[in-house]
Length: 113
Length: 117
Image (tube, rainbow over all chains, first blue to last red; front, side, top):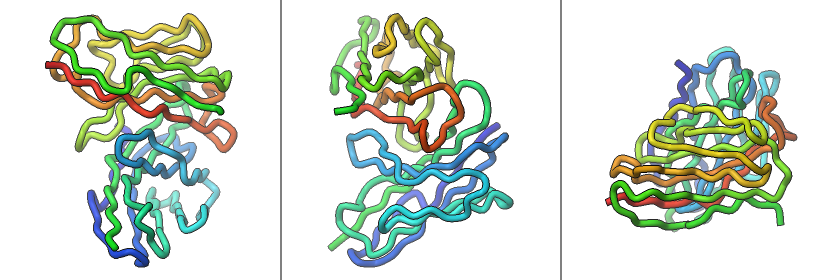
């Protein structure tokens, strides 16, 4: 069964600090992995997409890494801001019909002043 | 503005009273999908549609129906809602039903919070 597990479930950091969120997956055949940011009460918005051959992808202060061998990904947030407070969801796509996505449970990040 | 819209955004209803949540996209996307999001369970796919008149079950289809008569609309129908369908629902669309990629990003609607009493 395809699964995506994220850790930690929740995280509190001070503004300006860095943090790293983890994602482990068992999805086959692997197509790509994305990180979404979901503000409270809103739909997820894509931050990064990585395919099998990509090790790292940046989007401003967000940097995602992918190790396809160990089936792990991380999202690193640099110099956090209050607006980074949100849930971050790891989503892995299988290369099959139906555009099936497997969602992780998310990490809820709170950035405090 | 390119977007996915859902209506209503909030709904409180009673058990057994049929309801429809509408979803519309203005990006000429072929693929549309419905998800529910529950605490501790993440997003789970209910139904998806690869194109007009083509729909298929996702992970948790029980108690739901969908239709895709037009490309832009993908309503979610609860014929006889029950309290376990209380959830936050998201509609999403993407350009095609091919493998997700940089050109095939999935866009999410703002969500519909449903409470069934």
